[in-house]
Length: 196
Image 1 (cartoon, rainbow, N blue to C red):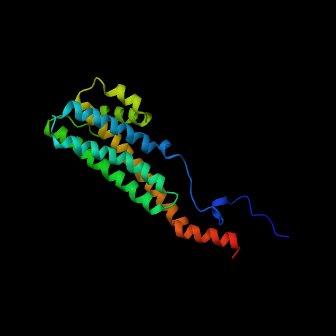
Image 2 (spheres, rainbow, N blue to C red):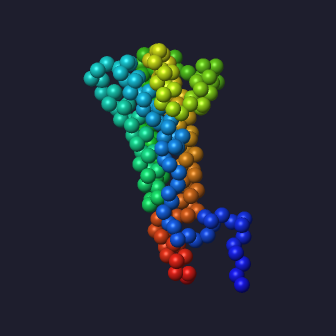
Image 3 (tube, helix red, strand yellow):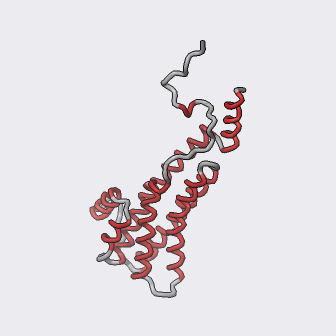
């Protein structure tokens, strides 16, 4: 009589008839929540800090939107394409880096202070941004701040989101190496159903 599989192995270690990964709700991803906050901050910043008609407005808003949208689109594509999820997550990361450079450019052009890692103000901002992922908090937080402070807060938040997206990409890479793409998963599922 065959022995049942050892309980030390997870179900994911064995061939499965289910080849679609449903995963977690992508709207609960911390990277998505932080990117929504970055989008809100960017929309507010360009309204108060840039002159109407400045092409940078559209570029910054589009980069912020691209970061947010590609995180969701990638996660939604994940069940059928790990490759697409990896590519779109990386596009989100690149879009936010583009936005970061726009904020830094504004600070440099306006000869405003750029908060440096290791300073008290940067450390405080990093702690606060690390604790908060919701738009409502940032909406209140930036309401009475100078454009320079808002730009610095955005840079800190982007840096944190970038680090989280890097970890997300490493996890996706690990999953891809372990489980392969959708074709491999479908083939494994068929073999599991047929028994050979």
